[in-house]
Length: 297
Ligand SMILES: [Fe+2]
Ligand SMILES: [Fe+2]
Image 1 (cartoon, rainbow, N blue to C red):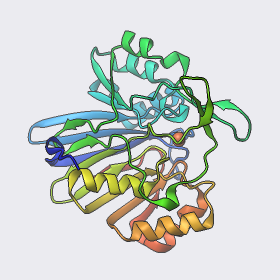
Image 2: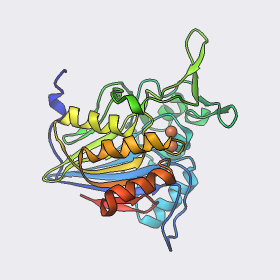
Image 3: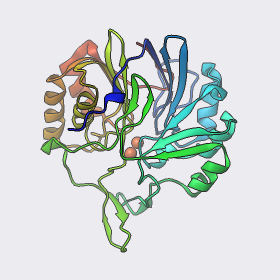
């Protein structure tokens, strides 16, 4: 494999705040909306970089939660979109306006603007919305960085790039469809999904995912392959096992147990059955995700 030498390096500290998630915790004043958004603060020496990963599907909810949590969106230096789905990307332009700066890198896979539909429970459009087109992103201060490759955000903080599909058990039929350039209506295996990987000094990797459509084990394998760091401090995000078979959930839990992981924080599209199995296996090393959850590594 090609050596990505620029992907090495580490952060001194990483703070992750869940801005949007499907749920909120007990007594929380925050809004829960189906989707994901994280506010990330990465520190190395005197440098502090602030990153927004996904924006959920309702910018009003994101702006509201940010205000309650005391997060100043004007401090955001870059945005990562994990994949095209509306519950991760809708309202991006409104959020760019709230950030109110010019030349904000918006990092995503090169195919994020392709048409994307779900055929279950009936035909629905699930991709990037018209309001968040490439033109409108550019008009509102965003600079698109669309690539299949990993992108170094700072030393110790990278995107995964396209995720190789290694584990056979994570290869499953999909309800998503796209249209090819020659007009075929075909299955869409969400090859645009990327994750964010942080390497925190003396801690290990922190892996942040959107939906994990490529499979959470494939994502972890990719993170280790890119960084050559095997210690995993935390895996946080949606694992997309909502509609998975019991066999797939079992295989996933077994696979995760092979890795050296301190914390698994799974919500969004993980699904109740998978959360139960993850809890039974990992006990105190497992938690569910909610809006407002804050992690400091
Ligand atoms: Fe999602
Ligand atoms: Fe998704």
